[in-house]
Amino acid sequence: MWSPEIPAFVPLLIGALLALITRGWLRGAVTLAVIVVSGLLLLQVPAGTSVQLSFLGYDLMPYRVDKLSLMFGYVFHIAALIGVIFALHVKDTLQQVAALVYAAAALGAVFAGDLLTLFVFWELLAVSSVFLIWARRTERSYVAGLRYLIIQVLSGVILLAGLLAHGSATGSLAFGYIGLDGVGSWLIFLAFGIKACFPLLHNWLTDAYPEATPTGTVFLSAFTTKVAVYALARSFPGTELLVFIGAAMTCFPIFFAVIENDLRRVLAYSLINQVGFMVCGIGIGTALSINGAVSHAFNDIIFKGLLFMSMGAVLHMTGRINGSDLGGLYKSMPKTALLCIVGAASISAFPLFSGFVSKSMVMAAALEEGYDWVWLMLLFASAGVFHHAGIKIPYFAFFAHDSGIRTSEPPTNMLTAMTIAAVLCVAIGVYPQWVYQLLPFDTGYNPYDATHVLTQTQLLFFSALAFVWLNLQKMYPPELHSVNLDAEWLYRRFAPRLIGAGFSRVWQLDRNFREWCLSRITGLINYLAQLHYPGGRGSVTRPTGHMVIWVAVLLAVYLWLLLSFPNAAMVGH
Image (cartoon, rainbow, N blue to C red; front, side, top):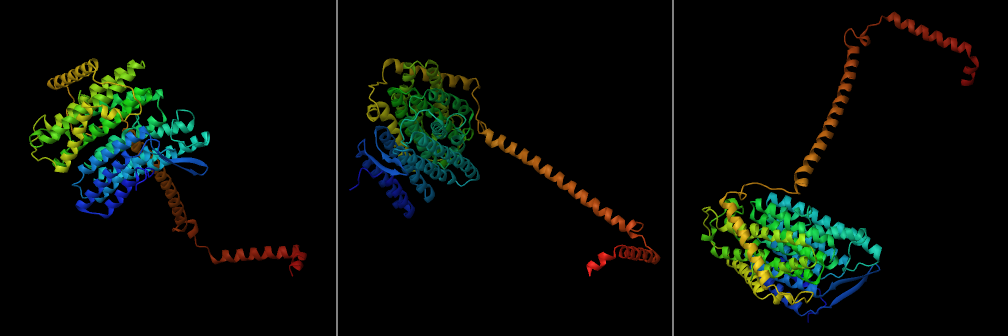
């Protein structure tokens, strides 16, 4: 019998080992079965289950189950199941094993009851996920993966320093409410912020995710940032600083997403935008806002996964992902286009789609708590996400100009995975109580009141009108072949140039010094040589008589010394 006290990540790690030793259809069947069984077992685990032990004088809790962790545990299983189905056609042991280890690490992190256990799975997340980027096996993916790994490991190191400082100050490593109180808590906050893509700490995502494999990006979009959202909700609810950080996160990616040509990179910016809503909700800290943050994380994993799957299918079938190279694909990929539109409607928060029932909770909480300017920023961000993810993605990929590309629908497993995600997007939008009953708090929130529906519909209508008008006026940023850098310019362009200029100066100084030394040595050699050249002072021929004179002088000096100091000669004998 399977004990409820066995941590939820164990089945997926077993699945990863089985995937390592199996091949072909058997591997696919085994991994699917493991995820389904693991999910069913988790449904049987009651809230309040925990495992405790002592380590180096600290009370640790490597496994802790409550409503918050269960909600993330459920959706991580859904994401893993959809991702594995989407990748069934892939015959790559590296990707399939790494994906399961990655999902297991995410589960281990959200069910961790102490910071030391969290740190272990935090680092496992980093190490396992980078293989989904390197699995594309291109030079760009290798370099981007290396940058990604450095930043993720750095986040873990900061977390380790923070938990040591926090443990030393408080005598506890419990993974609960921490708050910004002391150096340790600030370090932990920073570590969580790196994974949550706080402004200026976000570039690892927009840099690395678009370089992953078409299937790898689906897994990446589900776990890392959501583990960070969970960690913030667990440790820093009600921290006002998060309200403003989250509001900034919802707005700044819009401008970069609009000018970006790589459609998966557009989705990466969109991912930061959506995480901003969650961070903002956690910062407000009320029951409604926390519910909004958690439910939006739940829905985002599904609809963002659907959008990444649709773009992954396009990349898989055409080999292209830039908006300037695509267009007209609805003729040969109508089912994929339809499923993409469902994802776009969900992320844009259309009524009857999943985004509508979760994002509105955060915005309503902002108004209730008097954050009027933040509410306006969230409203602007909602219109912006409709532009870049709701319209731009399906428009430039499937409609716009006809690129002339003629292909076919992706493999059946890809369509199946996208269909499951699309059905969930609509089901949650139509019947939100299915998600609401899993939330940590019972707030009795109803998203379908007339004011909310009317406001959101008007916002979407005018946003669509603005897109059409800008296009007709040819004022909408064109899709161009280019690489757009934002804050990552600092370490991808400025830092290499600065370091290169510094080393260039050092090499120049070194070269000048060595040339000076060589010139001095050469001068000395020339001087010595000139002494012995014909006519030099060292080459003068002395007559034999000069030598005799010098010998006589030396003998005279010797005799004078001998006669002047006879006692010295006797002592010598």
